[in-house]
Length: 316
Ligand code: UDP
Ligand code: MG
Image 1: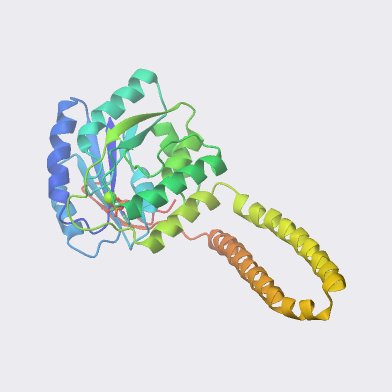
Image 2: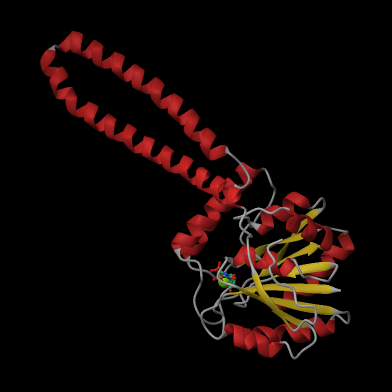
């Protein structure tokens, strides 16, 4: 059986078209399939539209109590999948459902655990692509996980990998990275990418920065170490500069040194800035520790529509 998991946040304009395109693709595969649509606390009519879909036996709708974010929503969907192969995609039709059969074929022919994807001819604004490029590069370096395109959510996972992901109760996770971590045989294929069908992106800059930090911080302590090494270098530089000032003072006299006061101010500002930056970074980690310690569920399922066995309380 093949399970599709789709997070939905304010996508009322896209849902009918999405289902209209999924159905023929999945029927053509001639094997059992289901689609789990996770309503991530939408504020438009998405939930009503989704509930309407549940007249079809393949469709189940998970209603979350509020907006938990794309990755938590996917995890909530994972918690009720039945299929042996699980495919995630976006609800805005940027990931064409027509690519699903190729993902599944690649997985089965190659015996892979995870089939990742690389967006070919990406249809996003530069504002969205440039941060992605940087993140892809940094993420590869830092996590040591070999993945070309971290952002594309059209991916296929084997059930075992999905179960391993549900088992780790981690907040602020990044699903593709987690999966690559847990899957033994991982591959990537190129898939098409389309313009968002309707509505606008749910990732304003604030959310984007947060997500990138999730990715980096949940897989390494490199940022903290960088600060430490940077600090040592700066301190050494400071000592050298101090010596230089002493020498200059001896050679050129008091007048030169008095003018140098301003240089010192400039240096001071640099240091103060760096200290604040370091504090902020440490604060970020402490904030995350605090969140983990509270052990709040990473999502709470209000109810599952289109299912006879009602599960609630979720969060695992
Ligand atoms: N999404 C979600 N919760 C959120 C933000 C987004 O479930 O808080 C879903 C959204 O409905 C879509 C997918 O995640 O299916 C990707 O979101 P979007 O298209 O806005 O992101 P972008 O394509 O700009 O990266
Ligand atoms: Mg999108």
